[in-house]
Image 1 (cartoon, helix red, strand yellow):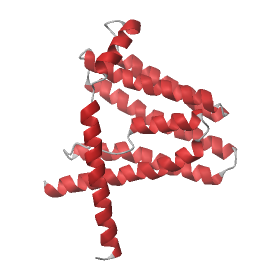
Image 2: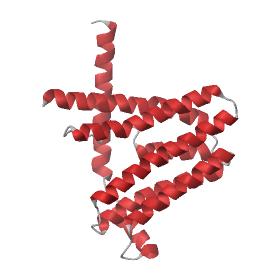
Image 3: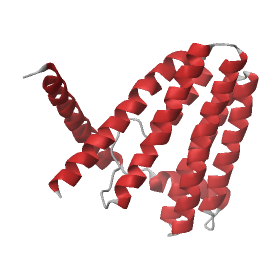
Image 4: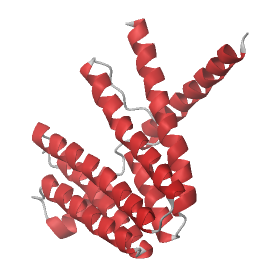
Length: 216
């Protein structure tokens, strides 16, 4: 076997085991936390919560986090990122438990998630521009590319009738890592992890869709 064919074979095995691991975790957890989270949410929002309100509150929390990142208030930015992630979790719980899952709600959530992802990275990029650190500017740009491509590949795959929910570095994982980077001022190593794993996820999804389309 040539070096290239060996490398492709190794990547194929890695992707295969990643798919199996993620499926096992997803099957065990799924939406099983919904009843507990909804019980907590009922205390504050009652029986008639609107999932779109949580979506908007999550977006505004992201705006606050972005402004804090720009100013260099890392710890407060980390807390705001966590808050935005919680709101993003709550909107889905409320929508499912109240039977208010709608195409408009899903569309709004998806669009604001994309804005939120890229606003955070734009704030980090501008911060490093002000610090005149070209290496970290390039690194943040590379992370932004991977972050934008992950949902794009899913949307394109689904337009081809291929459901594509797999991937190591989906939005929840990215939000957790960015919040940790801000809270503990580990942003540079976190950006390196994101740079590697977001593009790994891109390749993972490309391989998955390619395999599905080839077999169809």
